[in-house]
Image (tube, rainbow, N blue to C red; front, top):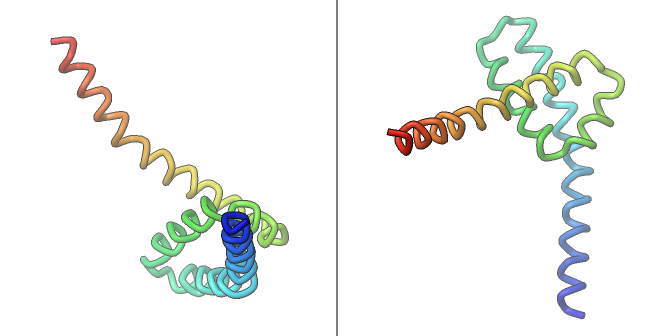
Length: 104
């Protein structure tokens, strides 16, 4: 019984965290992106990388929030895919190096 109550608390905290993200953080990130884009700031790249991280963790919440801004949603999805490919690339290089060493 104790295990179930701990699991229920964890799910409740997760839902509260997701709700807080949508209500507080995402509007701030939208505004920040607009400001950085208008000022041609080099920090825009970092902002979009953060969006990609948020997207990976809270995909459905971000998609729901950005339903009214399909352009930003496409940008975030694209950046998230790029980040995922970059994370996989070093592993692919290591795998290729190990394969070439074992062939020799």
